[in-house]
Image (cartoon, rainbow, N blue to C red; front, side):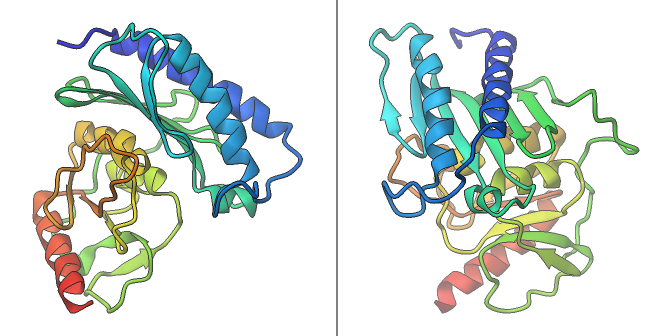
Length: 262
């Protein structure tokens, strides 16, 4: 049994992401931080803004920028908040409006409460395990938020992270560079599937979106059959997401064939 109220936790996540959006609106330098390879100034700003309030609430936190950080007093035993402060940092640095913050509370059973928000558009996805998905009420859609139902590779519109080595028979593809938003787009039926090419994703990249996808009715697995929920800052996975189990099977077979050929 989790020791937190998922709804209150989502309220906290929403507050933090809103404060981050305000902070980034005033940021002048979106360039590299110079602290570690591939890290941008907005990554540092986001990590600092989100990390301290979560620690203050007594949460154990795992972030892309800081790794695992323990609170001074563990008031939320058994709960880890997994955070990607800015997913799609390179997109953000170039002004491409496809970058997000992802926060997900994880307990012994896995993802419990997730909040993913596109920091450029404000579109928000929230999910609680067993309770479905909520998208931002201020941004209504002309269609229901649900996976597309596509079952065949030849009909699939896919998102990739990385460059596909060969054509796998899909209809079309895009590589947008922010996996949390890519996977949420699978959940909502924009994309039919998502494939990581390089086994380069930390759990913060996908765990919040994974809960959104699962609660919407989509499916996801690691390309090499490993557990996706691994609370270790050094571990990497190859998430593959799909609108249906049938399409997931085809995407996994394609991705595994690429692994065996490399």
